[in-house]
Amino acid sequence: MRIVEVGPRDGLQNESTPIPTDIKLRFIRDLVEAGLTEIEVSSFVSPKWVPQLADAAEVFSELALSPPHPPIHSSPQFSALVPNLKGLERALECGVSRIALFTAASDAFTQKNINMTVAQSLDVFRQVVEAFRGARPDGHVRAYISTAFECPYAGRIEPKATANIARALEDDLAVDEISLGDTIGAAVPSEVEILHEHVALYVPQAKVAWHFHDTRGTAIANVAKALELGYKAFDSSAGGLGGCPYAPGAGGNLATEDLVYFLERSGIGTGISLEKLARASLPALEALGRKPASKAQVATLAG
Image 1 (cartoon, rainbow, N blue to C red):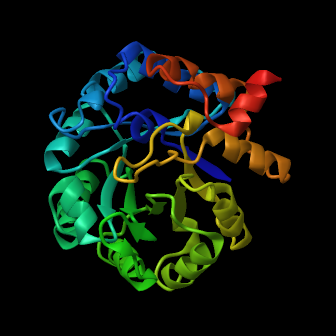
Image 2: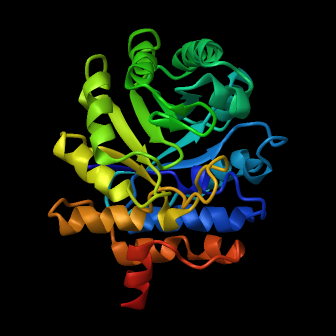
């Protein structure tokens, strides 16, 4: 089972309250100590657009100078979101060997987020992937498809549309992994199964991860359906931090605590300490003036 922790990047990027770099570093180190092995640390997007992550280079530099100590012998894998060639250049200067790229299943969403159509974003992907492979032949490329089920502007997305983008990422760009995002937390298990049926025509199951949001309380139900279908990779955010700013009332990402509790209680080992995980996001939440909202986190801290 793979859990890709996105809290330090996706969880914080839209927060207007600045989070000091030392708190971000403590957050990441505590996540590693809790047993998380794959963490999306930051983004090399322009600080003008995402000031919260303007310290991406400093974060990676500090992690390289003083690596966290995982409870297991293997080193944690850190990744960064890279929006374009300029961002890639900055990431490579910091020694980043795992990158993530971002597109969506609707033009309306990509226009709002990155001022491109989906087709244009794939053209940028192609340039970034080619440059990255040239610089880091052993590197890892993840691609996000946001609004895989529904878009806040275009409405419901046809499963074929999402599957066609996944096909392009697989056939034309040969990315290592595709993360399917329920960006506004609208999907239910039956829709997960339908999208699976379409995407599975083009992409091996082992290369697909699911990125659920819990806006309407369906994230764990969707995880259960994906598990039933044989998937073993999920994105989540400690403390349920983050979410989509274009989804009114969004409850944020699927909380890593809720995911870990569900998996462990179901007899699926994660190697993650729920007690340490429940405490990992507390300094960031405190800096944001927010109380824990993850049900499993609250219950664990109370115990």
